Length: 445
Figure 1: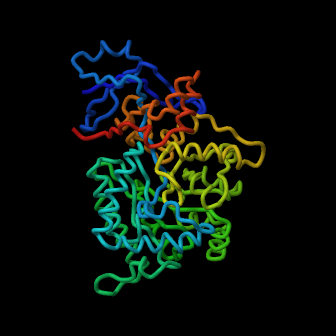
Figure 2: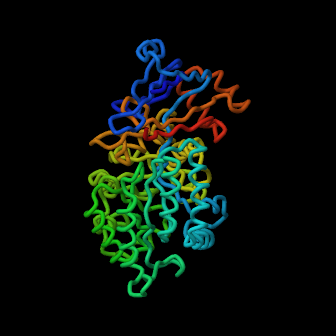
Figure 3: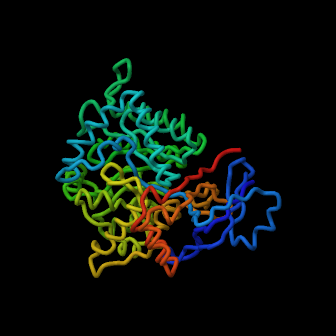
């Protein structure tokens, strides 16, 4: 076992997210192996109460530092790292001009491996310890990303990107080596093979991944739904209701569905562990469908602001009662940094609601990128699933060491904070990767 002495931030799951934070100015975090040999939180609380309960355990003292849960990124695109900051008129032109050309390159195993190594390192450098990520339509990209995550012990969920139409030919896996299978059938065969190869290996999970309804034929979506029924323990990820032009396109392609979101339900792709990115332009029936099926939304504020797609309606989501968490959505998103994402979510709350601006509490913002996102993934400890996104006893020992004096301005502002909310908000507004001094990952002993 090992212990860490510092200020400690964690969350009480039973509390309302705006007031869920628990903060020890002088705390002790004790980690050690559980029955399966995984490093988990054994105890956490005030240093004065715990120091005598762990005799002989090495204590690393981190004065002036804050230990907080590792961040959970609920939606990010591994192959889009090099297209961050590419100018375009909106989502669909951006995909055509920048994203699809870059994703073609991931058919090469060497290129996929090189990009995967950088991508995982960048997540960890920014304090992200769990991520739900898109790969490309090439199995090589999935293998490379899982391999890199396994090496660095990141908890990662990904899968083969399903798209059998409305994309450049180079992105479609058109045939097996013998030339007998078309893009649709081959993509489903490859998905199941990758699922069986990687799901549950180390800290890895598989996600059935239709890119979005317009890129998938009815046959491909139907096959994805069959896989989802056959493997209820895996995840589903896709996009929905991000852009008004995209919505019109989806409705034209699937006119029998009640709505764009309803298309996924019609093919058996709405259930717990189903994460839909954006969810900007939903109606009340859509929101009820999210709630009733147990699906969750990945809120992507930097991407939505950058591409001019719209604003996530927090108030309506809370009224409906469906779950959500924060996501960077790199490369439409503009930063790997959870601090940039949390700040953009604050802007969305202030500017994007239908009534007077909603002021998202700092604790709520932080919760959305840790425990809230973990809950959306079903990784908060319920139903026997591994617990991430928090530092309560039993949680996997993923955490970040934050230095609130990382920059002169940050040091000046945090020193004058008079409450926990002021401290958290100062780090959200002024923080970036420099604030993350170290990222610690749970590991097998």
